[in-house]
Amino acid sequence: MYKLPYFTEKDTDKVIAFMQENTFAMITGFGEAYPVATQVPLEVELKEGKIFLHGHIMKKTDHHKAFKNNNNVLVLFTGPHCYVSANWYNNPQAASTWNYMTVQAKGKITFTDDAGTYEAIKYVTNKYEGLETAAAFNNMPEEYVLPLLKAIIGFSIEVDSFENTFKLSQNKKPEEQLNIITQLKKRGDEKSFKIAKEMEKLLLTNIK
Image (tube, rainbow, N blue to C red):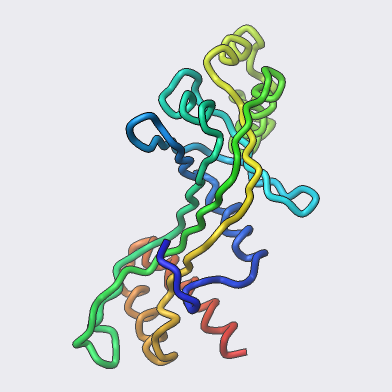
């Protein structure tokens, strides 16, 4: 991980909030010949001072088999990212860069029983579908849901440690940061705008 003090968020609550806002995360582990990975939506739970990540995956995949053999996993949470041109610096004769936000969480994965898998599917469906639509979990017939349990397995990951890189041009002077923000907003794409907003929040915090 690209670790420099000025690109590291020290406020744990902000890091956890970032994880909760970017829950479609990549879980990586150790395969026999190569690393394995899968991306899934996660529930980020705080319980008794610890962080737990809950979700479900397909059974009998390369990652399912790998996680069963070695339960040490790394979970990658990614947020907005964009190119930053050196032309926006006071001295443009410098390296351009990429601003981004990411968290890496390490922990151990354990798999649930059928009841736990049922709850994992219910959670993610209720979160994104709600309770009132025709596709709501409670409206799904059991004869459709129960066979799914044979192909899917729920899991929990107890996070042992996590690191972050919130690279938002903190190494530049305030006037340069303001110009970068302005130029990113002019660019008009969603990722650039989100990075600009994150830079604005950070700059306002530092000014206070």
